[in-house]
Length: 216
Image (cartoon, rainbow, N blue to C red; front, side, top):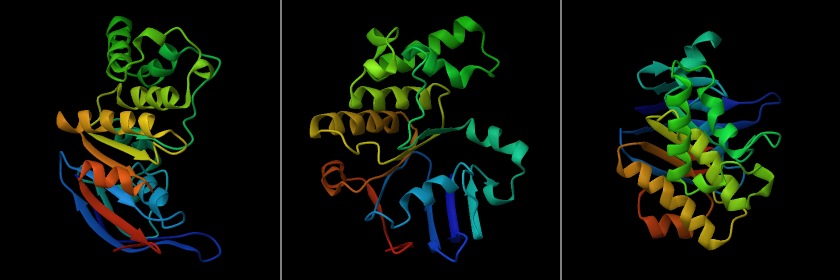
């Protein structure tokens, strides 16, 4: 499903964010990626949807070598991925419902089917009653749940989240992780980057620890 083989990522100026990273994630796994700030967690996750490209090594996602993909092929790769990053990029000039509808704008679904999927995603994260609200009216935890609804509306096989509980209180953080666990329980592969060791301990799933750009 996801495989890294001797992957390195170097930025201009010589900074090495990742060094010889090798691991694989099987379909249906839930994996926590931990490490202090600057360890390379965000870079690692961004390589999966080709937001970043590896400097060397191979990143294989659903049988495709991501580093070798042409730009025109990347949207097709991302159709099977749900992405929840720290910069949620919610649109504050549109409603909660309209935000979730955005990924379906270029799909082949009819308007009725797209609306049904959007409302099902909102219901899954407990926001159906807020569909007419503006995102700015939501709490931090609700905004994160909205980002998750938008990420899963296309029913991806892989769900990727970068620090989804950052800046949330303990109860909101637990609820967010519970949502990811529920998706995993129905077969979605989930990768979550977090610095919250308490969450990792509580949920007891597989752990990849990054230190200095290397998997420990």
